[in-house]
Image 1: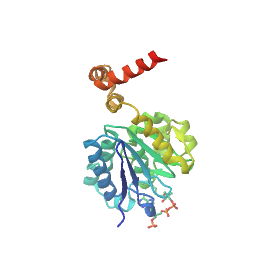
Image 2: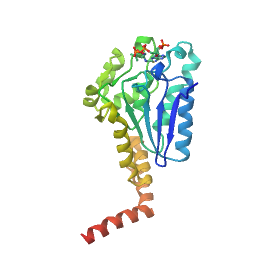
Image 3: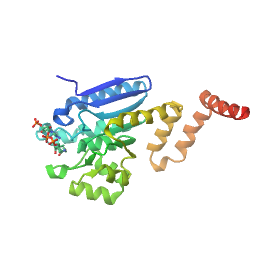
Image 4: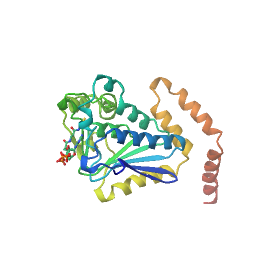
Length: 246
Ligand code: COA
């Protein structure tokens, strides 16, 4: 059986490709387990994560064949929500590069990323209520934060999906690229992140994710650590010396 997620490891990034194209990359338990394994590696050695999907689709949701058989106790295990929270909390940035459908759990996986880009073929949304369930893996709390309460409510109650242009206008994605350029564009973002100090990037992510009540204390604590770092001294000295020569 083909691996449900293809994983390419590089020094500064990991590319995880959902790989059940004949099921439109529906997220089944094997996919969940494989993504947890990706998280194991990224927690042990922080790197940028690029999430994408094979076959012109990001992910058409949780696997409905498995969902149909799940009962109350399965709902309480929060299978997808727990994974997406773990992905959201990875130490380095997560980029979702989406072609085609990003529906249901597939959309919620993308909402858990830090940065989302897509092709013109994107259809992103949450049709869960049409299947008799709610979008319980992050949509009810992440989507309002990403697009505002009014649009989130409309999308979640109606199940309407957004086109790429609509998602861009709503701020849900930050760029649209032709399918042939999507991965280059994702890598270009990862390249820019890699040019920065990894610890500064990680601390920025920690601060970005902290609740309002933790600011500005958390920023000061993280900055205090960075102000003592040899890399800060090196980078600032390099900047000043370069200017001195000019
Ligand atoms: N779970 C399980 N299987 C899925 C799936 C899902 N979320 N989405 C697609 N599949 C399967 C189909 O059952 C079909 O399997 P089969 O070939 O064994 O019959 C295969 O993937 C291809 O799907 P198909 O519907 O023929 O592809 P399409 O390109 O015509 O349509 C979609 C693509 C995404 C519009 C359509 O598959 C769809 O609506 N999927 C469900 C989306 C959804 O409701 N997601 C929320 C889940 S909570």
